[in-house]
Image 1 (tube, one colour):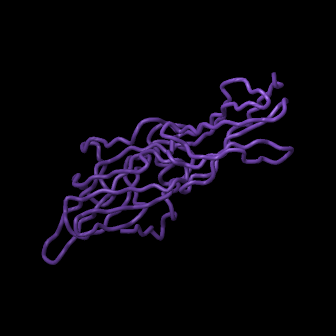
Image 2 (image 1 turned 90 degrees about the horizontal axis):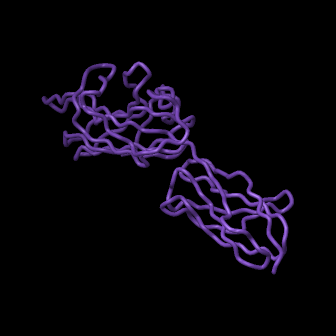
Length: 246
């Protein structure tokens, strides 16, 4: 079920997700998001709630501005409102988006996370809910810690290049997003021209071969266009001196 954002909150996870960071700000972090023990779950602002649901985040550690999915299931198999919440600096949780469960208790949010990196705690709250004469107590998902990552690109040429012969060029992107489009570009005058294109593999690498007909310096870079909200990224220019043909 699609999420409905709060009128008083930004349209995205935005500043709440980032200013609520509970650890030192990081650039590129590693490791998957981790669920915390139930004993560490903070109470919602209105009342304490027991853990009674799951939460999975895809990708586990999103890139700045990347569209991210928060989904899970509450133990109550009925339609009820749910709230996506992030921890504040004081440890309480603040609601940033609204949605609801389906009859099987499943829910889903699709949100864009803001830049600056960091680590924060996220959970989903199902507030106290009444159906007819039955009142269901408030429950939450497990709390999950996520890192908001900064992306980077690089380019390398592992062996000397010779005019008229193919040479290898390696483009690298971090964090890895397998299948993301990648381009190798050459600087021609003041214009960057795409000379090879493909997608990054499971290691974040795109490898290609180029051939330059004449000797002399050539400048290349890696370029990856916008993907699922994550901004385009380019590497620093890399200059190769192409040697004369033997």
